[in-house]
Image (tube, rainbow, N blue to C red; front, side, top):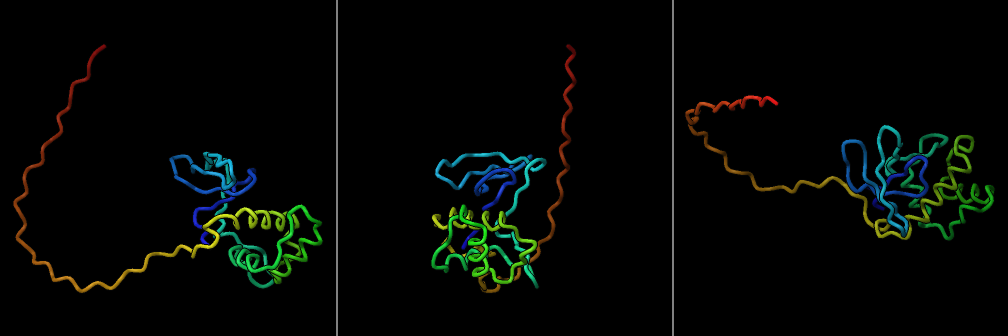
Length: 165
């Protein structure tokens, strides 16, 4: 599953794909059918990259990617609008060691709704993006050092006089 560039924006429903970055923030596109564009200002909006989100666990935190992988293998995923007890029971099957006191029903609903958005996308079945592996190249021949060329004097920039109005 390749979640590189997929973010959740605080105060905005759904998931967003980061298209570009500008001086003040990110240009985002919604993952729904409308493909709404949004400029998220970093000083006001909080962005959370899905590949970096973790869930509170009893021993260690659980990566969201791992939970989504288990949800992919699950037989059926409940509707996020179902009863909280039913959602909690399902969540125990995909994240058995999550901390019940710190993971709220609203968090579970959000994760399930994210899964339902992501499962329709082709990136859901892609391999995760990794750093490119450098291939071993044959050793290059040593470069012979040449005598340094005589440095030419640097040209000075000409100043233009300011025009008087």
